Length: 522
Image 1 (cartoon, rainbow, N blue to C red):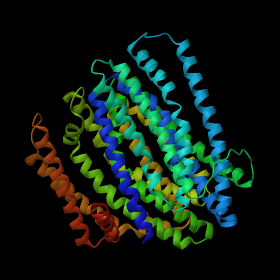
Image 2: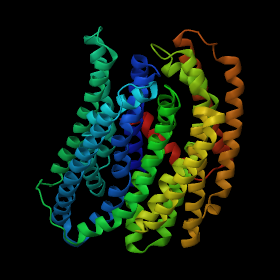
Image 3: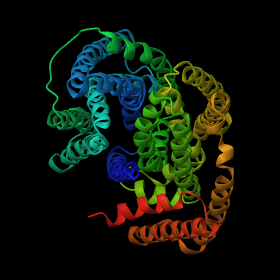
Image 4: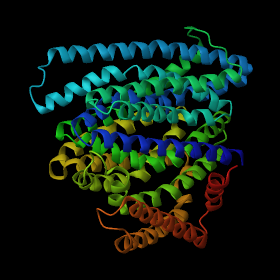
């Protein structure tokens, strides 16, 4: 099936991106450790980076793709490309205003605040100055979202999926170059190289899909016309933006609480979420990226049966991969952290601090993957109110639980608060989906879900038992640890795959086809 091929393309490229992201984090933690400077960078990058999720994976894409498909159907390729120009022009104007306003506000706040009055004040001052350097990234990444959405409507998924690759490569190149070329450089200077890598990567994120769109017949032109399609996108975006902004604020509050908690909390939260996002990005986002245009098309045609079928198929594939991935990540949390990050300025104490946080984060992986696809059904139906209500409830619950749990559980409490909020959001969204169309109910997946959970339990127990006997003790050579972790991961995956076939889980053939395409693609 063509959509299965597209999922394979996106998941393969996204796997490359996530691996490069891990390499980037490994280099960053080796250079800066889990100290205050790294935590300040993580906090500073939160707002501009989450604009990628706000627009690239959220409101703009969700409002733009259905409208662009309607415009294409109405006036063909020329009309669609003209709409791309109008939307890109407005996005350029809005993001320039956002970047300039945010930078001025941060500089004003820094000017009014006493400098270095305490360790906490120093961390916030550093984060503010880094945020001013990073905010221009917003312009690049939001324009990239416009061009990538247009390419998806054209049936091209490779260039949009490559977008994070350019960011990771640029950050690795410039930070690595600062280490190789300037051995005596202070950490503050190396951090400026890292920020320059963010901006260079953002430029390539915008330029590569723009070049691909040129080959599809697009010709760039500044146009601030506010015609009916542009107004429709704005109407659809406003409530989505509000809901996504709540999610953005949710993440920002968690990072801010972490930066206020201690020097390492923001870094530990960021690294744990990055590891958790590896299976989400490799598979869940890939499935959602390809399924969303399909369900948008079904919604526009009024084909509820086809929409429900594609939703169930996508959800089954997502849960089939991310439930065992969560179990494996939780079981192997400590050795994985040792393998990936424990070197340079990242010490054994940092591994001990991060391990329980990663275990907690891993348990929330299936819920986040679930929400990612469920939201797309509402967007395809142009229902923007329900996601806003879900986001508001999730935000309020996350803040309350963070404040309640950060005392007794420290950094792990912040991760647990986020998980519980995501689980509540998933539950509420699914109830609303079923209320609108019973064919979207998970009861159609109940038998397969029970089999997936059973296979995951067997796999998790087997890997946990083998890890105690097989993995080398802390301090062992890195090759021995790498061999042990990779052997256990491969054995667990093989055991889980065999159980899926033994239990005859529906959709296992599609998952196996994706795996074969990734391993044996020419």
